[in-house]
Length: 185
Image (cartoon, rainbow, N blue to C red):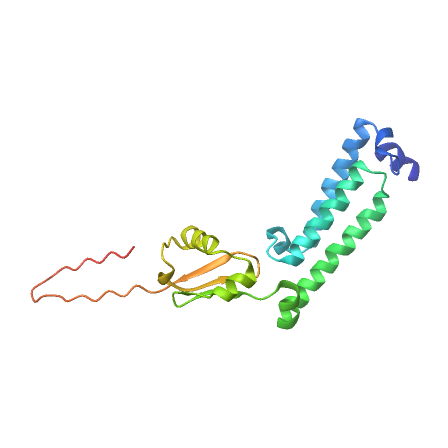
């Protein structure tokens, strides 16, 4: 078996001694192994919605790319990758059941705007500028004024979510009016 792996993948050989076909075989192996690892892991990992997901993606990408180009032990690296994916799944599962663990791993949301008022200390702590906040108001909620925001939060995944203030319109309807058309935009 070792001889077969050596001839197909040039396992353990430095990159200068690996043929084009062996490099392609390594790439295919890593591709399919990564697909399998992703299927074993949590589906949410693919969205990279929190620091736990980003850390796993960064480490896996670094490790698995080295299998293709460096004289790394293929089976050992794939084994460590499997361990990391299973550890990620375990931590994600515990975080889903324990608010304290979830806060430790993923952090907590930060209120940036409350009832149309910018929370400047929260902006500074979160390294969000007023320009960043204005941009997110326009992009995520199609709002131009912070006064139109009930609440904006820097969420645990790094995105800013925006809840609009309800628009209240008072109408006086005259006697005999049959149709009233209101368009709020």
